[in-house]
Image (cartoon, rainbow, N blue to C red):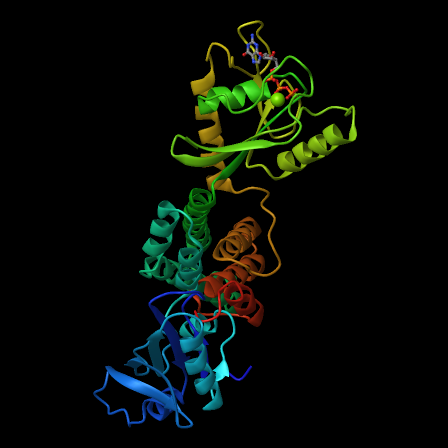
Length: 422
Ligand SMILES: Nc1nc2c(ncn2[C@@H]2O[C@H](COP(=O)(O)OP(=O)(O)OP(=O)(O)O)[C@@H](O)[C@H]2O)c(=O)[nH]1
Ligand SMILES: [Mg+2]
C-alpha cells in the first residue's frame, strides 16, 4: 500500500479535553504545516505558535511541533498540531490536512512506519500496544519497561546467534566430512542446545509477563456439593458465594480476583458438573465445562479431570485421594495456594498446549516456533542436513521477532491492534 504517502490522524482520544493532537507524517508534512500556519518553516524551527488557516478560514490557533526525519516517532518528517480539545477543532485541522494532500492514517500506521523505518523493533511495537491497553499500574509498568528496547536487543542477539549457527551448518554441507574437525559435531550440538536454552528462557519471560498482565484463570470444578463454593469463600476470606447442602446451589459461575503468591488470579467457582435437572442448570454446567477447557489451572474437587490439580475436600470429615483440604478448618489451604502457584510457574516455563501457529502472530509465537525448530535441529543431529534446516527455520522466526525479517501477515496482525493516530 502507498507507503510513501503522507498520512494524518487525530492522535488524542475523542471527547472533551483541553488539548488535542493532530499528527501528520510523510514527505509532505512540512509543506502542509507551512500551508496551514501561513509561513515557511525554517530549518531551525522545532515548535511555534500559529493561527491555523485553510482557504481563508481560521481553523484554530495552536502549537505546531516539527520533527524532521529521521529524528521523529516514525522516522519521517512529522508535524504535530496541538489544537484546542473537543471534537471540532482537531477535526477541522485534520480535514484541512487531508485537503492539502494527506491521507487518513490506518490503525497503528504511525507505529508501523516507525517499525518499517527501523525506529522501533517488534517487541517495542508490542509494548506500545500493551501500554495503551494497560488497565492496571502493574501492567503499565511492565509494558513501559519493555519500551526501552532491551528486549529487542536481546532478540537481535538470539537472531545473530542463529545466523552464526546456520552459517556453521551450511559450511559443513559444502565440505566433505573429513575436512571438518573431529570436535565439529559435539560443538555444534552444544551450540544448538545453548541457543535452545536461551530461546526457552526468553519465551518463559514473555509468558510470565503475559500471566502477570492478564492474570491466570483458575477454575474450581467438581460434582455438586463437593464444596467448591465453600473453597472459593475460604480462599477469598469472605462469604462471596452461596453455600448450601442442596446439590446444584451454584448455577452461574462466580469469579473474584485474588493474589496467590504474587500471581494475579481470576478464581472462578462453577456449577457442579452433572446431568442437569433443568435448562438453567444445564447452561451452568455448559459454562463450567467451557471454563475448565480454557483454564490455566483446574482445581478438581473429588473428580477425575485430566491435567487438573486433584484435591479431596472436606478433609475434616474424611481423607481421600489428592491434596486434602478443608474449607471449614482451613487445613491444606496453604498447600493448595502453593500448588496453584507452582502450576503457574510451570506453565510460564513450558507453555500450555505447545501448539505452534503457522504464522507468527506475536513475539511469543515466534519464540515458540523457533524453539520447536531448534529442537528438530538438535534431534536431527548427527544428520547435518536436518540440523541445517531446523536452524534455518529458527533463524527465520527469530529474524521476525527481532524485526529483521518480516512478512505482510505479521505487519497486518500486529498493527491492526492499534488505534488510529498511533
Ligand atoms: N465439614 C465440611 N463441610 C463442608 C466443607 N466444605 C463444604 N462443606 C459443606 O458441603 C455442602 C456443599 O458445599 P458447597 O460449597 O455449597 O458445595 P458446591 O460444590 O459449591 O455445590 P454446588 O454449588 O451445588 O455445586 C455445604 O453444606 C457445606 O457446608 C468442609 O470443608 N468441611
Ligand atoms: Mg456451589
